[in-house]
Image (cartoon, rainbow, N blue to C red; front, top):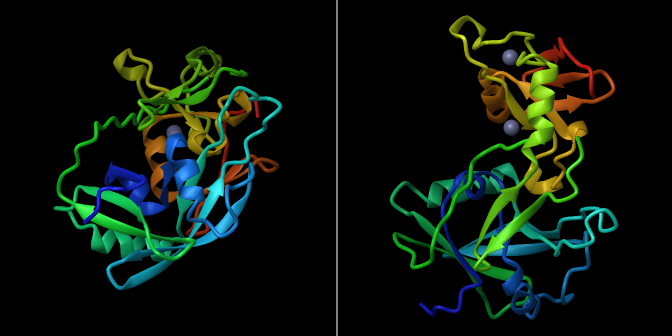
Length: 244
Ligand SMILES: [Zn+2]
Ligand SMILES: [Zn+2]
């Protein structure tokens, strides 16, 4: 196979569940393979992803972050697919296939996915869910144009944790109290990777259990009613709330 891929990355949770980011340095090249040319800020288009003889529907979108507020940020693009497609992709990328690569095809708006057991590129996965009141410096920084990591102001989250006395806003408990430790965590209500929003208004202070539950069950947060609505119909009101 040719080596002119747009990106080649380790298979991670995001890739198996919803999609992946397009590095800034390949946007121009990738745009040459789009019928509509380069994406405008915030634009979303339908594309096709092929794997072997299978073709999946996907979307290519430019994240519509607030350009006035974050004028120094570059556009961020993502390829996303729905749960049904994600399941098919997850079935193809079994445990032994550790890397995926995205290639152009002869057709516009269609890209080819390939899997491999190895990859030459450096890898860096930052899974920290770092928090912050308002953080105008928040950004996804690029290292060698390949790896993104979070740059957030931790003070905001740490202040919120202290305000809630390290209690979970959902269950109201301070789970570490009995053990003499503080174990509150910060959760971004709209994922930081999509919103780049690290302001207090996007943060929820939760215990580690509720943090895991939120990420596992993917409930919808109802800001008006101050509750999480879970896919199984369960509603859970915030027991504590002073900032949302
Ligand atoms: Zn809790
Ligand atoms: Zn979280």
